[in-house]
Length: 173
Image (cartoon, rainbow, N blue to C red; front, side, top):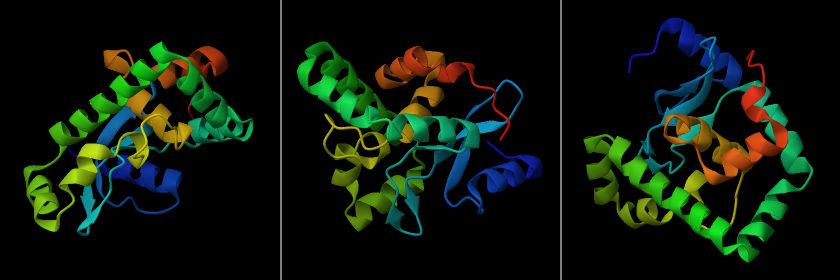
């Protein structure tokens, strides 16, 4: 996907810097504002296991408030006690790993193997987390959810939409 100069300018404004390792826009609002970026898995020979990066400042701020209210720990506790939730979350992790490999450039796959990072990319899930029953960051969870909207999203993303109506936010930047 070739990004226009106006898209790159907007992404740079959103991030406060030029994006490194940008592969594509994975999700954008109805009015064309990039919200989730698809990232390369290898940047300057360094592994970057985060496939989806939230770029929308509006969504970022909303999720920051949710995290501040303690929702990461709440969701982790629910995952530890609700077997159906744990299985659904685990399946989201597996889909993430498979999708990252499927979207990865062939030259990145080869270089990752040469550099000895293959196991990392098979074991690190959403947001680069190794322990799949944990939640590192709701921003990365929600970025993945938005990128997967056409396929029904993700377990935690649907929960955030239901609890906080993130899917109804007006996206301006």
